[in-house]
Length: 119
Image (tube, rainbow, N blue to C red):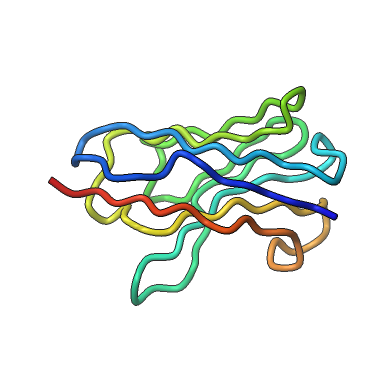
């Protein structure tokens, strides 16, 4: 059974950094595409970034140049390094894991971690 546990959310001032982590268990981590999604009030959940098993990355337009996704297959963990945070980055951030060829929505999700950007 796939389990994903996020950590690292919290309150941060605009312009500040924050790092999210997602630790996985129950499957072969290195074989899966890992991603981060976020859900802000009044908006649909959307893709923030994803990283393939080979390390190839993709970013949503709103976070390009500010966020970096990475993975450590030895630790079964993916990370989201967030810099220059803005008020509009406030959301619940979810970790996702899915196999190649499977839509992310059919994959596994973590419980979410709240990120609040506020002064």
